Length: 159
Image (cartoon, rainbow, N blue to C red):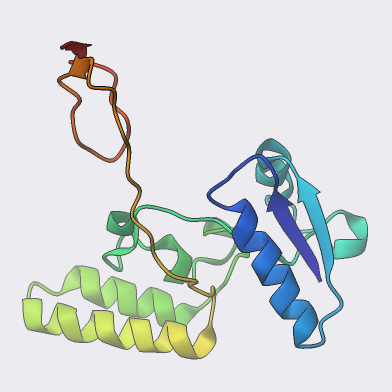
């Protein structure tokens, strides 16, 4: 089992180490490949077997709003080669998403989203390891920092 782990991405690197260690502890034959993020991004597109440069696992993260609805949660969509790396394919998951998109009834949408979540937990297209909240500190000598999903550089002025 090849675990790709970016050494230059501090928010991800420890997760890859823990993942590889846990897999070894449960008896898996693990090849932890410590690489840079750019190489990981290139290699994760490979569908080759592990003996030809492929991979088994990589850890990553994303913003919670991206996973908050069936329409935007690509890791449980089941889109096969058109979906997230790992290319999980599931006609059932795609049908649940389509039903969710088609219904105007909020109660039915909630029921379909719950059904899709249960289905994904049974099929396990990914393993969620948790959540975290990033914090950023700014110097007192600046003002106007805009709060948001990324560090927006505009509007910043000397205090």
